[in-house]
Amino acid sequence: MSRSFSMDGVDGLSVRDVIDMRADAKPNGVYLIDPVARETMTFRDLRVASRAFAARLAAEGVEPGDTVAYAMENGADAARVILGCLYGGYVATAINLVSGVSTISYVLEHSEAALVFIDANTGDLVAEAMTKLARKPRAVTVGPEWFVATEGGEPGAVSALTDGLLMYTSGTTGRPKGVLLTHTSLLAGGGNTALAHQLSAEDCALCVLPVYHINGLCVTVMGPLVSGGSVVMPKKFSVTSFWNHLRDHRCTWFSVVPTQISYLLHHSDRGGDLPALRFGRSASAPLSPDVQSAFEDKFGVPVIETMGLTETAAQILSNPLPPGVRKIGSPGIPFGNEVLIADPDQREVPRGEEGEVIVRGPNVMRCYRNNHEATSASLTGDGWLRTGDLGRMDADGYVFITGRLKELIIKGGENIAPREIDDVLYSHPDVIEAAAFAKASENYGQTVEAGVQVRDGADLTESDLLDLCRSAVGAFKAPDRIYFLAELPKGPSGKIQRMKLAEMALNF
Image (tube, rainbow, N blue to C red; front, side, top):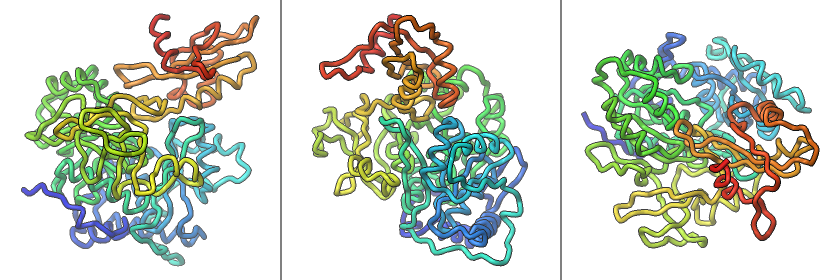
């Protein structure tokens, strides 16, 4: 069986073109299996549902190019909504369900979403997020009627350069930035995955990462679409059902984050042979070499470490599949895009020297929505994306990440801006100084902690501030610990030094 993949087959096409192409070539081929709803979707089914959904949006008065948000758990309906938006030339806008109410409010407002699609378990969260919005998108509970052909609407025009996805990512400032990815970028993101992992129409992925995350969407939804394969999509990751899903549906690969690898290592048993499984894939945060080795020893499954960003439609680097050389501790080599280690002027530095990791290719975002300043700071005139990550490249072209220019905290593959936590802590009248920082974690890669200085005589407790943070940004982003200090460490300019604070926390 050939396992070669070329972007030539989808180059210059839109997602609609690829859906139509797959439906024409293999109408009865299985594209998606929802094991919770016990539903199987063929490529013919996908085209019918996508066209019907797009036409229904048009009949509702939604114009091509408008943003349409989705706040949904994984499953066949979520996939149909996203791909239906793309099919009709609408901008699918991802709502991160664990980002906290205030962030969801901001995304709905900033994206100017015409509609927000919800399911049975997300309606209350979205309703709470919309309470303070002057302009509220219409919340629609998705149902089967949205995927049945009706009269009165036709999908709008769409091309490879049409904006397709708006996904928000945290940066070093408090508010998340809206990454705009075209159809070309989305297909290139899926294509880079297919290229690196030698995907074919015979492959079946297990998607356990949320489709509001770039890894879940571009790797395990777009990857099978561009390669003509299939995907199994349970509602969420579960240690108890993970191996059974792989076995029951003869999955050949899966994509997870290091946190999930750690949970599987410590809390699961494979429970029998998995003859179809070729490899597992790790992304979204650095994978501990010790955890990787222990996982492979216990389960006999090779783990391919990769690296990607929301701004690059997921994957930019990957280790080769066996028998290719996998370098533990490295996210690998470029596939489908260019990667350089550069000096502050974006000039390549010699191999082995540290510099900023920069990326160029068709998968790179078009811009940050309504944020010219951030776009100009991140994208150079000749198309290079500055990632903010520090790294070095060895003689064989493998990249090793050594640090971050940005002060981003990456917890379980999710980006958390320290400033966002700072602002919540500063909102309490007794807090004089505040700074959040990352702490290394075996399970999550990093977790959030913070230091504060409070006014004399305040009876404020750590529990009070933790409750404040959980209410504002959600339990996932909230700090695990908050340290009360007489003064936070500062540099010569008076700026609080987060790295110094993190070092001090080791001795508390």
